[in-house]
Length: 385
Image (cartoon, rainbow, N blue to C red; front, side, top):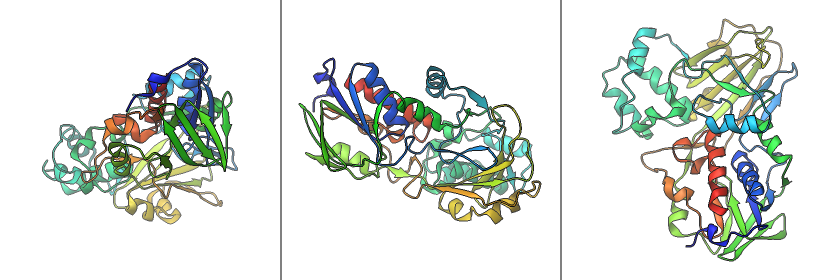
């Protein structure tokens, strides 16, 4: 099937399906390349799985994607271009204190041995290293929380991925909330909210997209929704693309935010049996925030994440008499690599006729990250320009 680049003409129209970071990054790049762009979004907001909320005390929390990690160059470049400052959160994303406690020297020694693991599952690779049971479980819990899936179903190669990274490196966020990235993109784009796309008819000559009961025509289209979103393609996508999309699996994750009676300095504590971690952090002005955030990954973690369990994990903190806020993504938080259902990175990213594909699940090694969403959007735009 011919690539969409074969139909490039200055002033062409493009439709983007999905106003998450991937879709908006694609739309932004297409608009800069001379396309007349319309973005259709099923939700009543932009940002997708990046969603910021301001609590009653003024603290900004991230209901979705949160941490900007050291390798995330595109997030940093995009924030600078959009005039959005980043700030250091103080939370050491890669250095969480396990509970029950594990001797730090023993834990660090175990972590130093996992980087070369490639064969089998995460669980079998860890068992093959001869680690003590407390160290093995602490590392397995850390990876399961980050990926949202049990260790015995994931390939050992995941241990070397950036999303599961260990170490006392700094983490950052967008001042005022990561969703400001999406809002800044959308400010200069035509975005139709509460406009779910039902059907995409395509040929080498262009596309007809049905959204909210109306037909829209364009020369090119970016599909930037999670793989679990059901879209009707006419004609159906090639078999290789269909297989790749059907094989994508998503991790299970949830967040819980508990207001505190007083601000708490940055900290990070991991519940090994509960498969969640609870952390405090700073505001953009450097002051400590009066809120405890907790993140759970894997089905066990999501089930374990209750206000009572979080308070029990953090007896060092005093909690305010206020309702916790919970965030959950029941259809899936982000894509995950599994032995039984590997991600076909090449097929997921490959364009089909006038269609390009974006989303963190198409971002290869950057999957599951905001960085991956942005990279995939920029790549999808390049496929069409």
